[in-house]
Image 1 (cartoon, rainbow, N blue to C red):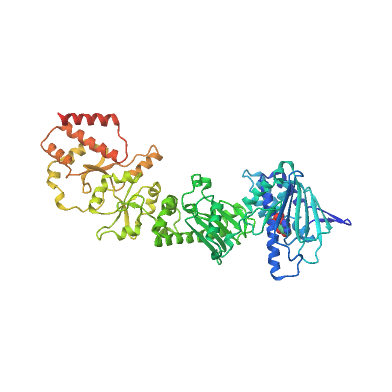
Image 2 (image 1 turned 90 degrees about the horizontal axis):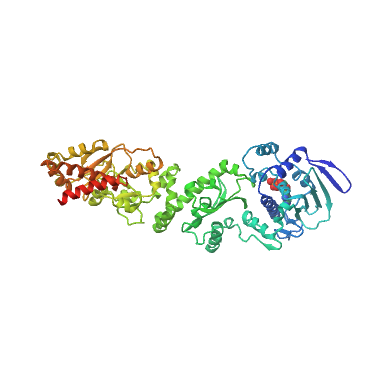
Length: 619
Ligand code: ADP
């Protein structure tokens, strides 16, 4: 409300004290992007057009019923002026005094004062949220003129003017057209907004999908219509792909899309895309997502992190909801239960789409997984609600897949023999590295599938992957695996009579937890495995990389008594042969196994010992 100071023709009004303070604050104290003011103007014009469009549905008796619904911006860089004209609902005299002249909510000023004192930069979106977006225009200019006429057939035209300093005036004018024109001369520091290219930039960024044509100096700027508001079958593939390219900057068409229109517990429309390839922009974290949030076709924010969980951030697209207030701040989107519900629903729909691919088009699914599996798999340690669905969607390379091909846990279990109780895996840096691991030999020979955990994220997922369909997952580097061997291959007499294990233990001392006869080795002489409490060699190396002081657990050394070298050593020991040679061989076998596991040993010592062994062997 404002105090009227009536004169005959021009009415002068004084802003209330609170409003004055507020204006001062907006113009002088709050740091924000001035381009936001342009967006606010377009957003208000678009609102006004929405209102008249709605009214037209039921009321034929309005001013200029034939006028096209549009927004025209005119700039003049010489005169440094800007004006925006819409054919919307327009404003009555009361609108001008009540809506333009007052602060919408009473706590606004107090809140903004606190913002000013705090050290967080002011979020420009708040301006809109408090219903004071219009005043952000005073960042650009010292004086605003509004000329407007309401859509009521018997309405009158008015001119509103204000320098934002404390007063505004209203004058009745001759105006034929329905709608509003807002014009001003730009301050020197904002004169960029009298350049048409600069205004076009702002429109493309913030208002490209506004539902009405927006033109700058006669040229229409927003070319892309709100595709997500159309019915699914009204949108051609070509249109959709164009739109995808536009929002994602990806040159390729997407691998797939989701077009949703939901009503009920949460109301929103969404058009989401899964890229065909990892876009280049993916390399930069800040470019990871191009998820745009709209509220009733008006752009709210890009890269809206609250729309999807982190592990689905390879998706780009648009979500448009009427459940949020039109001008909603980032703070509000972060904490809004509406956003949480949208996220929940969207996540479910995207998982369904992926499930369909996995079921009907495994090639497509694998393509997706190859590109985005790394990120997608992190969902297992963050999205516990969808854990079971995510488990089904996981893919792994294994001893039974070719390189770069995948198997699922379900297929793994289907391929298990009756007496296999556990799901086996082996972790390592790469497929090549795990393929060389001697612990695989037993499983290869027995045709038992072993999953390869060769992405770093697989390791972090292990704690969340304890079992599947009641079958525990087990690293084949663990000592306590129930390995079945045919009796003949176990040369018990050789093991017991030769005392070889005892001399191994004596030589290695507390470097190992234990030394045992192996059931898992076929071609290799020795391997290191992990005791019940220890972690996988690969995991341990990662821990060491992250924490210098991390000391791993001791390993168990397993010996292959069918290997010629172990047999020779056993006999040599039994016949009390060259003790130095035996001990050197033991140390060499141990350190060799360490090396295979990706650990380091002291090269000079290793080489000196090897030289000595070769010298004796050639003697
Ligand atoms: P908000 O848009 O959040 O309400 P603003 O300060 O931006 O806050 O605008 C205040 C009010 O002024 C709007 O709610 C609307 O009633 C009126 N208004 C602003 N611009 C226009 C316009 N172009 N046409 C009609 N009414 C407008």
